Image (cartoon, rainbow, N blue to C red; front, side):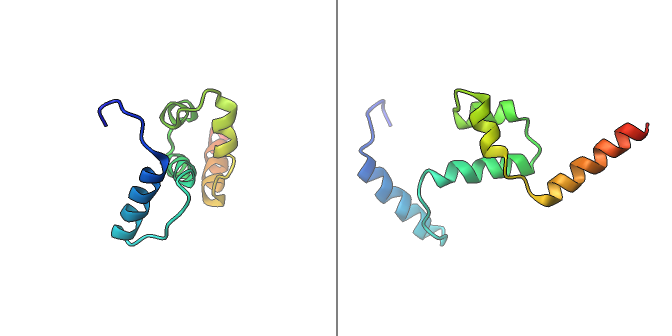
Length: 87
């Protein structure tokens, strides 16, 4: 990748090959950003850090992506909030 543009069809073929080698279901390339965001949420990464990693220009875009938080994460967050309010 010496600074040359990548032909989208070539990238898509490479991505399909990588999915096949990894034995994972082929998904649209853009969906990998959503997967990345979901993993970052699960890891507790601050939204601003995720914003930078995902190359979003506005935090609102990142927060919309982050909107789908698991119910387990929600329960943990509410328990932490409850403990903080009790102290």
